[in-house]
Structures are given as structure tokens and as C-alpha cells.
Amino acid sequence: MTDTTVQKTAPTLAVFSTKNWVIQIFDEVNKIQPFDITYFEARLHKKTAPLASGFDVVCVFVNDKVDAKTMEILKNEGVKLIALRCAGFNNVDIDKAEELKMGIVRVPAYSPYAVAEHTLGLILALNRKLHKAYHRVRDGNFALDGLMGFDLHQKTIGVIGTGKIGQVFCRLMHGFETRILAYDKYPNEALKELGVEYVELPELYRKSDIISLHCPLTHETYHMINEFAIATMKTGVMIVNTSRGPLIDSNAVIEGLKKGKVGYLALDVYEEEEALFFEDLSEKVIQDDTFVRLQTFPNVLITAHQAFFTKEAIQNIAETTFANIREYLQTGTSVNQVSSKKGRC
Ligand code: NAD
Image 1 (cartoon, rainbow, N blue to C red):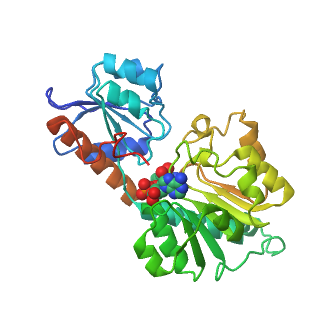
Image 2 (cartoon, rainbow, N blue to C red):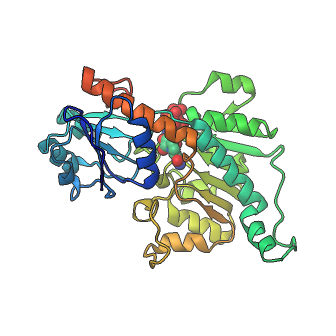
């Protein structure tokens, strides 16, 4: 825990799930009109919520659990606002926040390029087996057997969700001269002009060589990639998820990998990632057997929720988070406020 000493009148901010990179960028951006910040390494959940006693604002990240019980504790402890330093807000009970009249703000866009470019990086690395080639060459093994990939050129890419990130990803894939099929409830006219074809999900599943997920996690999208969806896909399909873990039923995708139906799987998110990601567990025995099974496949590549992690994105996250908090505390509202009426997909 680190304290940043400022004037007594400055609003107090409790930052949960703190890592060194969070402290560095928050302290940097906090130099003008500073908040009185206390950093907690702990994740926010009902047992750690009392740590926020007396703070004006609580700042959380993707794996903090802001459920109804946690929210009640925060309210009783005097917290006025929950500031998410991320885009997704599936970890927050919005209805409860509204019932308790507690503000929720988020960072809707910090760098769609960061996530879209990481998605492309995963596809290229998995296809051309760059992660294996790196180790082989360092080992003095210059053989090519087992490293064969495929051209992306003229392959069919299925993009589910063409919002800020999906849109950038479509443009990157357009550069590879691929055919792009997309599914979104709100088709994007500019993408249509680029040649992106909007189709229904069954057609996208049936025709795509690579399927990339860029829609939010909702009741509707939970486990959308399940055994039934996988059964309709091309044999050897590549599935890429840089959105939210629970979009994919991990057990179903494991069955698909075992049968050879799923040819490649790239993940930056995992449905039970809360227990794993953002921590150094290299000296621990991993207890999640599903995750460990996923890691055994030669055609699975996993990164630990790092798609957002570029210096431009982190700078934007810090600046927008502070601007959101300042605006909310001064006016009682914020352009980036999440509500059941406007912020939800
Ligand atoms: P966005 O809100 O701009 O776009 C989401 C799109 O999904 C919208 O166009 C929406 O209409 C569409 N959509 C909603 N429900 C859908 C459904 N059932 N089927 C198909 N499309 C649907 O969001 P964004 O900024 O592009 O982010 C997309 C997701 O990426 C976020 O929800 C978040 O979960 C994830 N994300 C991951 C990282 C990371 O580091 N891995 C970072 C930021 C965001």
C-alpha cells in the first residue's frame, strides 16, 4: 500500500487491483489537480470492500467483483462513485448501483488499436508458430518440420461485434486482402463500403476460416461459442477471443480441439481468469484443470489479458479515469457514466 500525500481537501480515491504499472501512470497523470490516492494490491470483492471505508471514489479493473453485496458495503462506507479503468462492465451490478444511487463511470475507448493489433498478433503467431520458432532457433534447432502455416490472403474472416475494436480489426484484415464476414446487431455502414459483408451468425460460423470475437459479454453472448456453434464451423477453424472469457464454453472448445474440429485457438481472456491472470503464479500449482488442459494443446496460444497493454492505451485509461471522476464529483454525472438505459449492450 502506498500513500500519495496532497492537500486535505482533495477527493480521496481507493485504487484496487494495483500493479506497479498502475501506480506509475496514475501518479504521473495525478500531478495536476491531484486526488488523494491510496493504492491497494487486493482485488475488490465483498471481503475487501471495507478497505474503501471513508473514500469518495473506488477505482477498479476487469477482475474486481462489484456485485450487489460489495456495492452495499461500499455505499455504507461512504463511497460515492465506482470508476472502472476499463471498457467492459460485466463485473458490475448496474441495477444495484442505480438502486443505491451510486455512480459508475468507465473508459469506453482507450485504444481500440491496442486490442485489434494484439488480435492480429495472436493470429499471425499461432498460424506461423512464431512462439515455437523463437525457442527452436534459440536452441540451435533450425528445422522447419511442424512450423507450416497458411496464407491469410483470400481466407474468410468472421468478425463478431464490429464496434470500436471489431471495426479496427476489420480494417487490419482488409489489408491482408481477406474476405470479411461480420455479425453485429448494428451494422457499420463505413465497413460495408470497405467490402465487409454482414451475415447472420450461422452463415458466419459455416464459412469462416478464422472467427474473432469482439462483442461484449452479456446474457445473450455468454457461451455463444458452445458445442452447437462449433459443430457448424469449418473443420480446422481458428477461434480467437480477445473480448471476454465467458463468450467461449472452455469445455466445448477442448472437445473441439481433441476432435480436430477446432484447428487453432488463441485466447487473451479465459472464463475463469480471475483466479489466474495478472499474478505471477510460476511457483504455484495451478488448480484450474480446464486451463491446464488448454495449455497442453500444441495449437493453442494464450496471453494473459494483455491486449489493451500499450503505452498509448494506459495513458488514455489514466487520463479518462481522472477526467471521469472529476466530472462526476463536480456535476453529479459524466459522459462516461454507465446506466441501464445508455451504457448497456
Ligand atoms: P463496443 O461497445 O465499441 O463494440 C461492441 C460491439 O458488439 C457493438 O457494435 C455491439 O453492437 C456489438 N454487439 C453487442 N451484442 C452483440 C451480439 N450479441 N452479437 C454480436 N455483436 C454484438 O466495444 P469495444 O470497445 O469494441 O470492445 C469489445 C469488447 O472487447 C469489450 O466488450 C471488452 O469485453 C473487450 N475488451 C478486451 C480488452 C482486452 O484487453 N482483451 C480490452 C478492451 C476491451
